[in-house]
Image 1: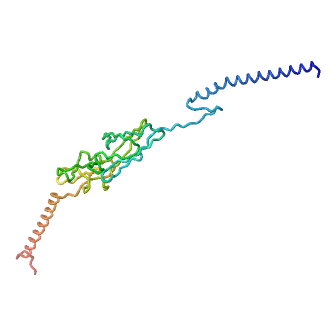
Image 2: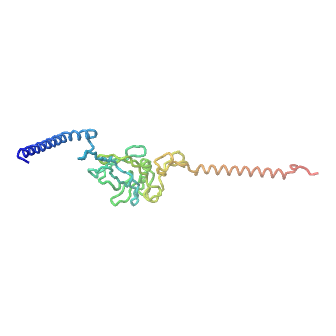
Image 3: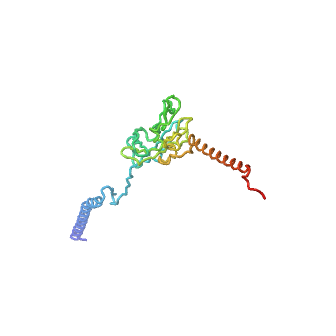
Length: 271
């Protein structure tokens, strides 16, 4: 190859390299220009969805915050009725373990609002109380008699034995309503020791023929807590006297008929 041919080959080679470099620069510039536009087009449909470097969506699931209050239940601690509560946050981490309990009666009336400092524990049943040693000193539906020893029914808070509903708030979530039934009448904490369930007279008779035992069915329905009792006392004595009078009258009629048969002429002649 002579000198002129060498010069032409070198020039062509340099020119080809320069064209390839220009093409590469143009492709790179176009890619750099279009990438933000493509990314914006992808993210503008759903700004909350992150996008990978390859332009693919990353699926994310944001759980809905809620409170699980299925662990609420009645509990006896010694001879006192308590509410055992357990609050489980779902889908969020609370900033505090403090919870607010709005306690309502069966009709939705607010009984009391209580703030607790933990998400699990126990609180005394409304209408009940304990001393410093944890011994029960009062029960819903009962009150001390004037002698200071015995117990008599207290109708002012007997409705609390019908069950409660509790709404729990742990910021920022509010729970569905938890329902708690009063301890069964046979449990050791339902009534003062040595007593039967409190009864309320509804018939006005003496002695009563219908009584109500609040909470006896643990169904939060007071309509089926009243039962009719057999008539006793004065009513029973009246029934006994009527039966005795009827028996006496029957006896007198029998004696009269027997006497007439024995009197002369009272019996038919025999021929």
